[in-house]
Image 1 (spheres, helix red, strand yellow):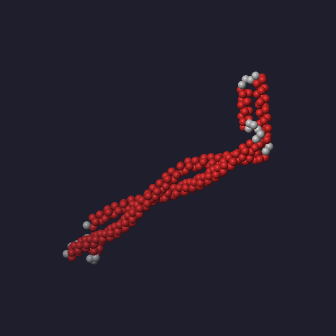
Image 2 (cartoon, rainbow, N blue to C red; image 1 turned 90 degrees about the vertical axis):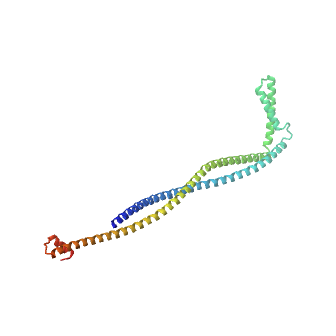
Image 3 (cartoon, helix red, strand yellow; image 1 turned 135 degrees about the horizontal axis):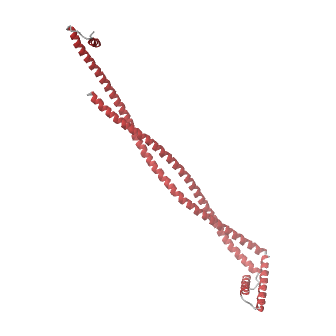
Length: 290
């Protein structure tokens, strides 16, 4: 009965031992997977931090560019208003300076351009050629005299310089707005690439974290099962050891009983006066009969 029980116990112990080894292997694999998971999540956090840093920098630059555009537009609007007033003042001053010039300077210049066009593009007789040339020279002289009067006037020059200055302010504002808008578009293009990258990294991080929690839970359950199996194996070892001890003790008792019975038979033979061999004598000694 005991040998059969021991065989069954040893088989069960071997099954538990195999399961324990498998569970320990699972724990080792889980440990490596968890370490890789933690490492990758750390890398992703670093990448996310770098991306967020770039995004924050770009967003701050966008805000600064919007302020630049707003300020440039304000400068432009003010300059346009002043420019309109300055041009009107310039026209009034020009009219004052040329009030005795008839027709006015713009009309004189238009008339000169028409005469020059006809003179240069049409075939003329010598008389007409001379006539046109005299008119052209006369008009040029009138225009030069009028312009000299204008150019020599300090108030006109001050207004002219103010118009030029305001025009430069407007041009500079337009350039600043154009450059800022160009940079804003570039930043938007960059952000349109960075935000999807950020989303992908966050999704990967979330997935890894869910996998991490699943693996940690599996690790917890497996560790608990390993402890159970280790305790079960210790219990089995104790039971098997005790049964083996009892089996050995029983065998020794059976051997002693067999020896005693055999020695009793030899002793009875000796009492009957029958001869005994040396081997039988040794059996009597081992059994304690002599």
